[in-house]
Length: 207
Image (cartoon, rainbow, N blue to C red; front, side, top):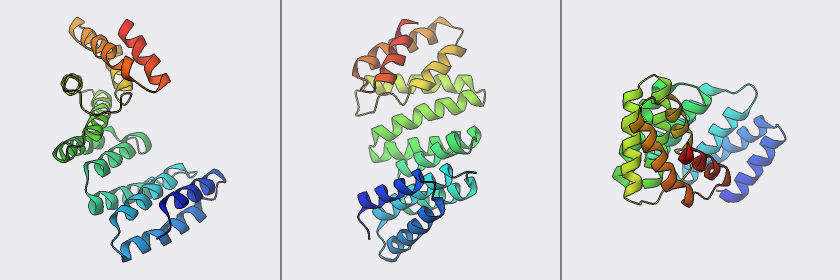
């Protein structure tokens, strides 16, 4: 197998140049090699890159992108693989209904694996999909879960929840929800490392 870092760099260069067919052909070769030696780690990387190529080409080939997501989920089977599938369903394919199902699967699997980062990321995505499908009560339950998770101080990446908090706050018409969002933002903003997300959380804390 080729060195993963070198493969990543070459694929990104091909994408930047608009050579999507060349990128896909090279990745198919790497995919075959990884399958032949049952290297699941390498196959995970290759399938992730194949999804990205299909989503970025013009026009995107979303059916192919989803087929690679499905293969990745079946072969790798981690909560993170399910979360990436859910991300593709939401951001690339635009299917919030199926995102709800897949994000919930990702949360269950990642919690079983002790993967707090993926569980936290998936909660934010689930919240967005629930709002899009007008399940506001369920979205409020997700806010509760996020608050409880943050209170336990797990290892998470702060920022993944920001868009969900903004959209929920814009829709909320009760003091309890608004206050919860403000208090959560006050807790998260000081530990957020991304300047853009930090500023957005600070704005929420002052709303």
